[in-house]
Length: 478
Image 1 (cartoon, one colour):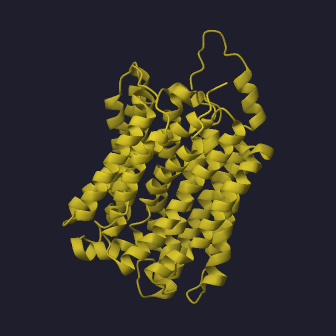
Image 2: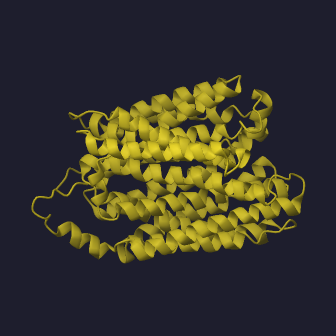
Image 3: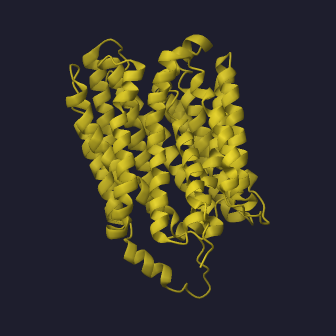
């Protein structure tokens, strides 16, 4: 029996705080963007990179963060990640030009890419002794993610309306320092020998970044333009190069054998589509509240709080219990379908709508779907990986969620703009554009739910596969 850490629940608080802050970093700047544009001189086409610089670097480097966590030690990488996050926050808050701001956001993304997989590795180390405790811990940890996303919108409104936009970055400095002070609660595991696949890290990061860049710029330069096609072809070539490197080097960044872990592939597909539906939902919902219903920054953030409360309640008190009774597959598939239903409901928003009729009930249904799917998908993606590859599995699942979020937001933004969401002041056209985005997100979530129910193995099948001996001559790698 593994050693039980008596301070594991206090350690979980540190890890959940880190998860909350890392995810909040993708959303807190949303309502502050117009003020940042005025002060820093962003062009209309450049402004999106305040968001995308973080997401691209974060998603692209998560695999490297997971590998470093496995080799150097999760606690050391967790500490390093927070130091980098604080440095990026200082740079972003002090920026006087647009490109310094973007650089600060990219540095924050590096910090987040180190924090996220190391935090998940530490959580698995703390709670693998008891499946029930692990489920509860994962529920608390997982609830910090959507709560961080929604709280970011709310706090961004508070800071922008009553202080200054710089505070959306300043907030990370004291919280980061307090987290560093509390890392003594975390288990310390020594480093192990191994090498870092730098070439593979460069290839996968560049490939993912170029793919997101192409999708983000496609509405501006044309989806069928030569530039867009060349960028997508270049991204595909880099990702193929990454796979070739993984097969040829002695210690790859992502051993391809990891995909033989039961449900890793299907769970990551579900996480990709979950991110591609959920993140655009809150993004366009916030725009609908502000640009159509006329809410201010603070009121818009406050209007999203009911979703946060529901997510926290269900993830901590309901989903973990359901996991032990019905397993991951029905919760992931069913949760995605419930999310799709909420998005279809949101697509019926009206230019003369109200919060109580057009927003609240539909957003709660969508949040229910998210709360049912997110934790089971995380557990399904990681539960079969051995401890020495927990950081890798965590890096993969975080990468798929964030890349899905970035690509989904870019694609659905293009859909919304083509349907009138770029016509500020024309409420019927704006609403039609936002409605189209909600429909697109619903399609993504519905596809994810159906594919999960058709393809993913159930818990009994996974347990039987894990118990079966590996064929002679084949080493089952995780």
